[in-house]
Length: 264
Image 1: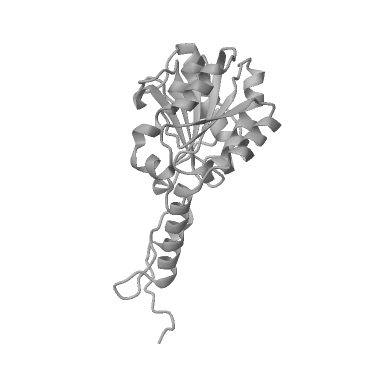
Image 2: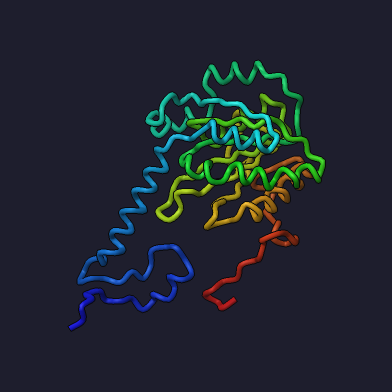
């Protein structure tokens, strides 16, 4: 009699192609113990990522090392608990943050990067400064002017519109922690909006998702963003009318992916 009570799944070879939980086998009518414990660990990591506070000082030090000016803002959600229950408050600045923004005397710039904790401060801690570090020389080489970088806590994507408008930015790029998945608690999203102003909706933005070590690399994401920014400035729009065709251009670490089901 076999010592292993697990009945294997015939699709197990596909597990090498995806981090998704497929072909886990079974023990009787239940999930085997090892996959069950792995699920619980992943769930705990996702919950931790949602509640983890962003180390703002560390992010600002990283931005300073890149030669960028940064400052801190807060959303209208006063606590993490309020933020999770009231998404609308995370989309607008607090009264104190509005005063901070209004008191600044920055020259208008082509683009402003907003670093926002979102639903995963872990994603921002691991990716934001590194991604901007890849973007910075590309922007300088292309003649873009880059404004100061606000670091915003308890923030949602739309808060970038108010900030971009306040800083006189032609484009705003919001780097934000995405909702943690069971295999991706560290995924950062990049949202691009032309002529930002309060009241815009998601159809006015472009998104690059899953920026992280195990997903879309900083180099590949920067290549995509540079393409979208260039096209946005040329066409003076972002959103549903601006398509991501960056993979059609040569770039670092960008390889079109085939369909493994078709053998491509």
